[in-house]
Image 1 (tube, rainbow, N blue to C red):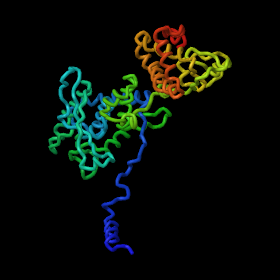
Image 2 (tube, rainbow, N blue to C red):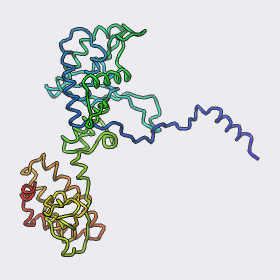
Image 3 (tube, rainbow, N blue to C red):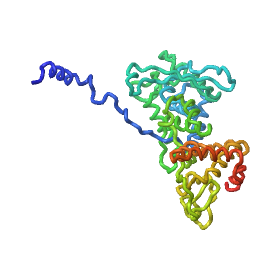
Image 4 (spheres, rainbow, N blue to C red):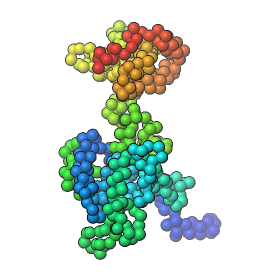
Length: 390
């Protein structure tokens, strides 16, 4: 027989279900990344269109409309990577002199936090200060907006930068208000239509500030030599937020993600020819071979080729190449080195060496690595062979 008190308690809980929702953390398992960053072709269209649209704004003396303010907000967003919400809530006190650089201004905005589905964050949302150095032309645009709409802000005693006088028909016409997510979306779509913006497939472009942010962060990622740390710092992220939600590996990086070949300890048969960094199952018709009767000479491609094989006997050649990459960074050109060669070092250190270690060959790896450092294989005294095949 069930205790009366127990069932009474259960009944109380059921009758107050609003205090115990079925899912107190909606969307907690959502992993969708939303829109992708703009492609170079798409970004070029947007930048050109924004320049054309904003140019007349500098000549105006009267207050800016909601559409004109949206154009200004987009111009700030695409150059700073700041999200829509902090920009919409930007105040007239946001700009300040940069303490170190004369060609920069400091922009201070605030973003909401406390919405993460973690128990220790279940409290009133707080505001987190975000301070970012911005170029003078961006600062000047913000100053223009502040100046043009000063009278509008005075009507409602607000300090929000993107305030305007409503001109649309309806009960709100003539009243001072400020940009919202809804008016932003409406005006962005108007901008897309007005400048006939198209994506890579020729369809109408999908555009929002989130795409600008992803584009900005991916640009920083590539310019920094694919440094996740630098990209995260610019995005004002900690942890893996930048990687999980914003970064989309460039095509070059996608091809360089890891070793696709095999690792073996025993020697290969004579049917598997030598290549300068190991062996190849089929240099004429293999995975990445030209398949036109000629031999493949894409030695960097070996590391992402399924036909590539590294044996214990290949370690001397492999580490000779490894040390040549390190020694010749400046001569090869740092930009090209970062793009083409740095990932090879990562593959060797993080994939090849541990794989041989699991096969009980760590001592052999260390011996051949030191041998290659002091007396490199003739193939890899320098990187001239790569320059010939590029």
